[in-house]
Length: 458
Ligand SMILES: *[C@@H]1O[C@H](CO)[C@@H](O)[C@H](O)[C@H]1NC(C)=O
Ligand SMILES: *[C@@H]1O[C@H](CO)[C@@H](O)[C@H](O)[C@H]1NC(C)=O
Ligand SMILES: *[C@@H]1O[C@H](CO)[C@@H](O)[C@H](O)[C@H]1NC(C)=O
Image: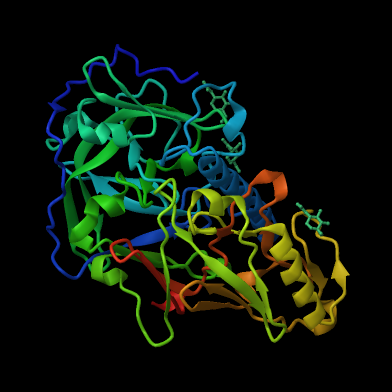
């Protein structure tokens, strides 16, 4: 199904055979920050003014399952990094995945002269790619296609270069270009050439930060939607991600602070380098655990406690733990809801239910384990804090807006989903749980630091 790039495309290729593409540090010590645009924000091409809180929640549930299936397949089938790649349409292994399942977009510039692109910021993949000219078949995007021939800094990478084998599905093009073919289970796919180019970022504060010779994919054939953006910026832990490529120039550190879902029009920031340093007396740290694929950010969750109801030990025997060594949960900014194994979830739900006096009701979406009718509370339902105790002594106290979602008027559901549904088998700490925390990733010290924060006012 995944056809190769048509040979009729007359691209003048300057093939690189060198294997060293380390970006230069040109922006000094302070690091830099870029805006993160939520998909429902007015700045996003995806925002839909006719959506309602309940339609947005339904869509967030769908995207959560789509992401969870992606992680589950990648881990259980041991598919190396980047987006899942399935060899043929008949292979429905990735049927849960859709090119739509993105949460945040970021804008940046590609080439010389610099052209603006808007792409999905994705902590669950590595490769940076955008759609390029010429494109015989590209999904429609809101910004003109990037034209590599009009850029003086564009270079194609040779399929003999070491970096080519870092792609999870690579092949050698007609002129020895390093070619990638990634397919998604929903019929979408991207094909293109691994290349190097100068990327630049508008740093909050006005400076433009330039990163020369960054490895990225120029997609010349695609199908899907990819959130109407130009492509994807991989922020994962693998070799080709923006984070690993920036490497020592950002001290291998980045952070973000996501405002609450009700504030999706607030622009938040993705911070690189020392701007991404999270500290303070109320911050806690837990190891980032090397896993397979190295794209994903694995943590170890020891237990979950509910208000004064005591703790529930997290079942250590989940499938994620087998392949991820000691890790038993992935932290991901692109998955709205949190997934936890069913046994742990049922114990947590029972503790929540016994600490409140609201009547239980069925979930109209058929997804959540515990929903409560809070109409008797006069609009001020008191619900217990739920604490996720990550290993290394890192309790993260989650508030009501992190752990409950309003599925209908006066119906609140515990926003945790069983990872045993559909055999997903992977626990995920999702972005609703992460709201109003400043979360710092330090890939050198392999440490995640979390501090409570008012993300709308940072
Ligand atoms: C993407 O989302 C839109 C709107 O929610 C939907 O119409 C479309 O079918 C989706 N596309 C894919 C590939 O899932
Ligand atoms: C393109 O994607 C749509 C779903 O988004 C799918 O129905 C269609 O078959 C795909 N086309 C090709 C050529 O794969
Ligand atoms: C989760 O556990 C509950 C209670 O034991 C059970 O009724 C339910 O079917 C389980 N769900 C899944 C997805 O395994």
